[in-house]
Image 1 (cartoon, rainbow, N blue to C red):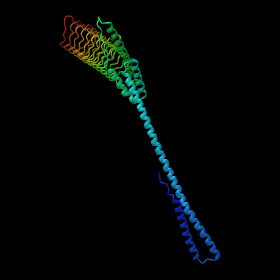
Image 2 (image 1 turned 45 degrees about the horizontal axis):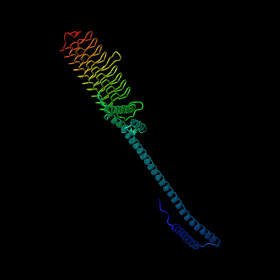
Image 3 (image 1 turned 180 degrees about the vertical axis):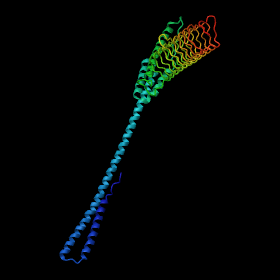
Length: 414
């Protein structure tokens, strides 16, 4: 802001203008007097002197007025710029205040919903879960944090009440019934958390791009994950006993050491999944796609991979040392699969496709390989005692070096 003009400015300028006018008039008057003019010419010259003096006075005043106008214009421009600067600053402050208020509101909502998850009442926990989902939908920046919170919640221990002995008292039975009811309520809460995670998987229609699914060691016993999108999810060492995973997308999921005993995996996509040392005892894998899956050390006792109802695909699967005792692999595609030292005792491999499969050292005692395609298969040191090889397909590159057979081995061609 420019400082105002001093009060003495106008009087001083007026005096200066009058002084200049007087000096100019005096000089002109003396000049006219020095001329030898007639009376009429002299009168005309004096009149011109007064005109010039008046012009000097008016010109001086005009110049000062012009200066004042220019100064006033400049002052107005500076004031306008200052007002705009103040307005812009006020808008920035307002935006920052609004942003801070929004962040505080988000933080409060997140904290409140998180607190609800710790409630003893199932209804309150469910309300907290749905509040977190709404917050994630409206605030993309919170989606990763919400996903991490839900995963951490699911990873927390959730022990099932122990079975009571037959001679339990009435009080013990009542306490057990209450504990079982609370357990069932918590299972429902956890199912809701799972539904939220899978509903907003990054590849889903309503996906959250930064949503992590980190459920290693999570208790997911009996969970309903039918058609769930769990691609690339971390389920290492998770307990998925009796879980329903029909039509689920588990592409490249980490399921190493996971417990999938009696899990329902019909039509599941397990392409490239890590199932190293996973327990798939009694699992239903009819029509499951295990192309490129790693199953080294996996336990598939009584697992059902029947092709009669679908085409179980284990193309290139790593089944090194896998436990496939009594497994139903009827019509399964095991092309290029590595079954080195796998235990296939009593396994049903009727019409199985074992082209280029590595069965070195595999235990095929009493296994049924009727009509199995063993073209290019390597059976070096395999145990075929009591095995059925009737009508099996083979060629000159099928390796049977060192195989173990007995009088109960049927269909030998070598």
